[in-house]
Length: 129
Image (tube, rainbow, N blue to C red; front, top):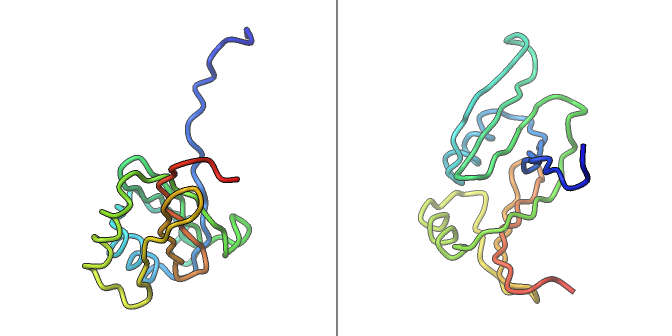
């Protein structure tokens, strides 16, 4: 393979640890507006592994021990951050009330899921630093 050959690398798909399917769907689908693409269990009594998406963003959510650890932080570029803030405010999810804040590199809206994972949506206006 030549050093100039494109590899066509796709965006990474983060795997987030979850512990409760009902809370997961309430937060990611009902509140954040993701759609469940698929769910998989080896059998009914075993942990769930699922894929959700919204527009071009895809996440994998897993109940499997060892797939991920709770408390991860995702940095998610987003142009229309005010629109997302307005959308979330109208839903009045009782466990989160996110707001857009100004940071040195732009605007951020951070939301923590029920399992301690932080989703930081950001409209970058300049590089951090």
